Structures are given as C-alpha cells and as structure tokens.
Image 1 (tube, protein in one colour):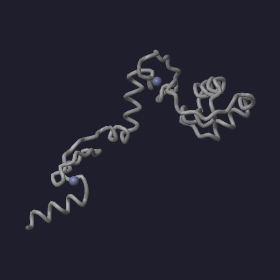
Image 2 (cartoon, rainbow, N blue to C red; image 1 turned 30 degrees about the horizontal axis):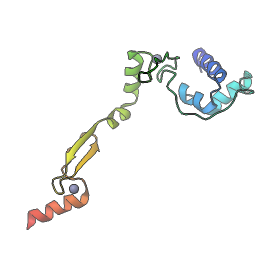
Image 3 (cartoon, rainbow, N blue to C red; image 1 turned 180 degrees about the horizontal axis):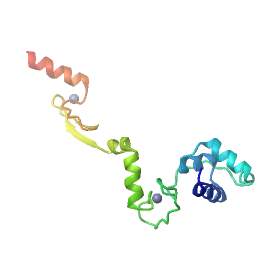
Image 4 (tube, protein in one colour; image 1 turned 90 degrees about the horizontal axis):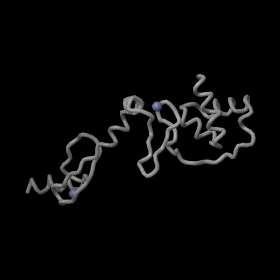
Length: 135
Ligand SMILES: [Zn+2]
Ligand SMILES: [Zn+2]
C-alpha cells in the first residue's frame, strides 16, 4: 500500500464507503483495507453501506473525478489513465466487439462476440444446413 492509497482510504471512509467499495476502487484486498482502517480508527462510526461503483474515482489511479451533471459519468481522470486501463484489461475490450449476422438456415438475426465469422445462429441450424446440402 502506498501513501496515495492510504490517503484514498481515509477519504473514502470519510465518505462512508464500505470496505468492499474501497478495496475495489483501489485494487486492494478487503482485509488490507479493514486492518488499515482499524489501525487508524477509520472503522468506527462511518455508515457501512453496500453500493454500486459510482464512478466518482478514476478506475486506473483512483483519483477523485469531477463529474459534470447531465453528461455521461466519467470513469477516468485522463486519456492516459483510460488507455492504461484498457491495455490492462484486454478481455473487456473484446467483449465490446459485438457482430451481427443473419443465420443462413432460419434467416434470424443474431449477435455474437469476438472476431469469428458465423453463418448459423445455432448448432441446430448448422446441422440443418448440412442435411439440406446432402439431399
Ligand atoms: Zn486516473
Ligand atoms: Zn438459425
């Protein structure tokens, strides 16, 4: 744990964030956060609530973000952090690649993830296409 993370924990606890949220935000284990809070009297009177990630801290460096109302919630403090985060999570990038195809057997539109070409929506349709071809 570095100095910045310690500062963040103090700040997050002041904002009544749960250990789980803090651990998640800073990329630490819950036990690390808990024992740090206990040692520094940050555990006591703060209301512990479970809440979803609200995107108020940069996903990459944990810096507090200034949200502009009305706009889409920012997740990163800067382009540098955004690129670094995406580079560290390539599997998340792949999940964004949704491609639409039309099944050659039943004509239904279907969507699939990844880069692979698909001609049929299901194994059943794939099987049928073979059956037709052999007749
Ligand atoms: Zn950042
Ligand atoms: Zn089909």
